Image 1 (cartoon, one colour):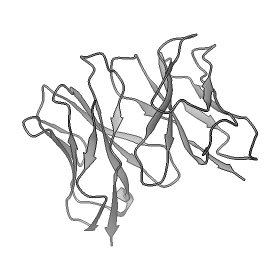
Image 2: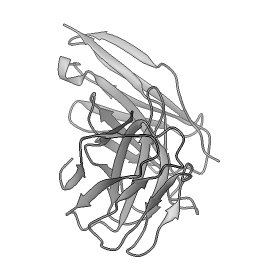
Image 3: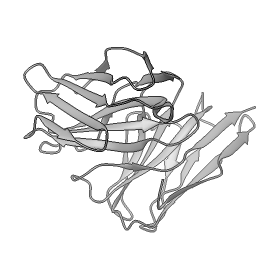
Length: 114
Length: 113
């Protein structure tokens, strides 16, 4: 089955710097990928998603990169702000196969220093 | 959170009691999910429902039960058989089972006294 791993459980950056959060997955058949942001005591908030037919997708201050060759996913946050402090986690699905559920990573806690 | 409500926000239970967590949505989404989140852990799937009057067990269904009598509602009962129920419980919805992302509610924190 699918497993989703994390490169770093915590990340500390200076306000204004760019942040990069990484995620690895195991199933090469995975075809849908999502990044969520979760603030303390709240439910996860959708940030951005990407399908396996794309390598890159950009949103407002965020970019998701997908490298299917090494089964790696990253979230880049430009000009990180204190409000970006939260836990970020990726989720992976294989919608083309029989398993339509998401598999979640454990999350990276991002701390932004003023 | 928009369109997904969970109640109560905090819930305290004595050992041996059953408690029911509410999840309501007005997004007209077909699929609904219940997850459990423990500190430092990823989300674990308890139960999910693709359509009304149908639901399936997830990875950690033991000690939990659900119903899906209405499209808008997917309540979760934590029974006394659940050995370690203290956790943060999250409800999520998706437009259809095999498409698009899942959107989460604000969560219910359950504590067993």
